[in-house]
Length: 147
Image (cartoon, rainbow, N blue to C red; front, side, top):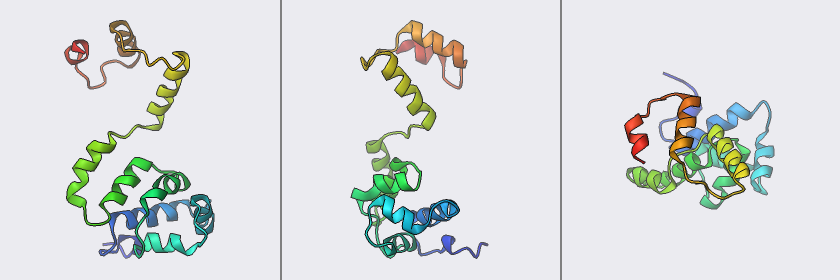
């Protein structure tokens, strides 16, 4: 069993996450740096958030995620469930959608650039090209071809 304060049983999921992430970044960023990046005038707010004494304001989730170099979607879901709405997590996850990885974001960026933002439909030919590039990585050929 860990004696680490970040594992304290009474802390919310988001408080534990913030505490851990701030610790992971501590070699590069101070809590003061993080507070400034988020736009908090008082550095104490960071300590209050990671201890769970203050709830994460929803309007600051994106700036907190950026400062902590983490996924805003996941942080948002944790912020939504910090008020005891844990049973609503599945609904929140459906609403905010499936997370997109950094690599997927890069693919989307390249697609938008080469298509001049035209949002091209995935054709049978393009699907075959992608399959040739990546192989059958867990998807089923029949399901892909049916689309």
